[in-house]
Length: 374
Image 1 (cartoon, rainbow, N blue to C red):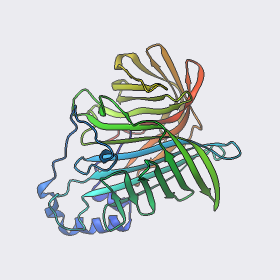
Image 2: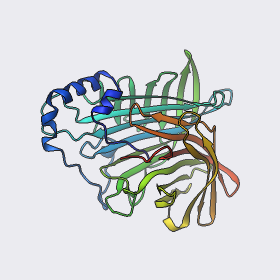
Image 3: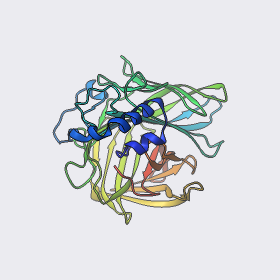
Image 4: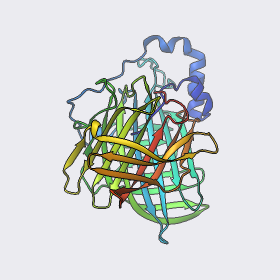
């Protein structure tokens, strides 16, 4: 589960003065009276569609928004644990699709990167934004191939994901190797996010990815290994108008299983929609019905920067199973107001199953500072 704020027009471009955004801004200012003449009609998500790989590893520019989202736990040679997040977003703007200008910002590419290190005690993160084109940014359609300047995520011929990402305070050079088949979320990849059928995404995951590579900090490369989870979603309409945000977890369990659960929250904190999937070590898929899921906050952390309060420790009951999420560190808040416009908590967590250690994953919470606008 991920998100992208669609109201990316002049104000977003002003916030992020990359070469691509400046060119786009010039285009807005000079011909803005004409670009809204024929706003594009975005493709909608419908049930019953069969996802087709490797094509669906790639971008879907006819849909409004899309993201590739990799998170994981890494270990250094001395046994220290760190968490990482890499997300690339693609967003189609409302500019005239027939506009032939190379400067027309029809697609925007945004990327976030973060590293959780308990020795530091707070999240290190970076973000970039540019409109697609001119070799600055792109999202390829044949398979996963996303780029934003020097930041890249590519799926090679052997199905491995190669991540090269020189961020402000760290550099990630990672290879993510699949060990299990693609996991289609929801109904064969059609994932409902609300009570209306169109409030949905196409959504698949690749859990239990084996990670190898390097983290470089202060000019010093450190070899790491670990496990990761990759999500890819695309949609044109996601949230119910009453929704303020969501809580989502994706977890690689120690026995080889994979757990995904989310709830869409209303302003009173109640679940407007929720769903969970557990694929066991034998590959059997268990879909958990909404009435059998209950999220219960256990402990709150208040951000000293934004004042947002996040339930960083969460209990999730599913039928006769109780899961408990405990953060690697409390401060894993990411302020992306310079790119997507949102402030959210995205962090590495350990997982207990009925009181016993069960695995590791990533927990995402949105809409705790203010309602998330999509």
